[in-house]
Length: 95
Image 1 (cartoon, rainbow, N blue to C red):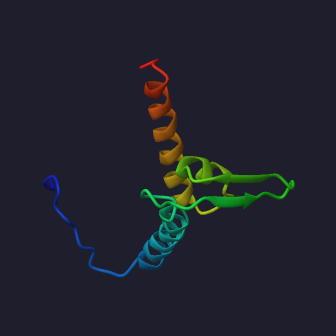
Image 2: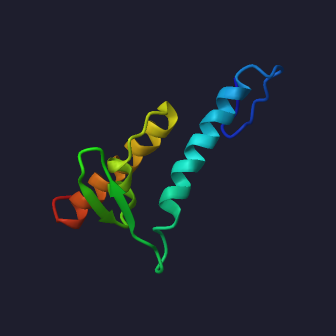
């Protein structure tokens, strides 16, 4: 039985390419959203395939508008959406 917080090392390199792929995909999405943070955060202009244009500096909005296909990055986007909906509930006084 492993202790909480214990790091387990695998004896083989099995799964290493998938791990690297997951890290690279999440880093790419984080880099897109990173520049919207802090007081000097920049706006992002997102153009979809239907011709709609959205300008936003809200990370959750940007994540909703991105066409994400990587499974791990989809989880990251779902977390952002979940946090945004939870924060909006409290912001509107329903929590």
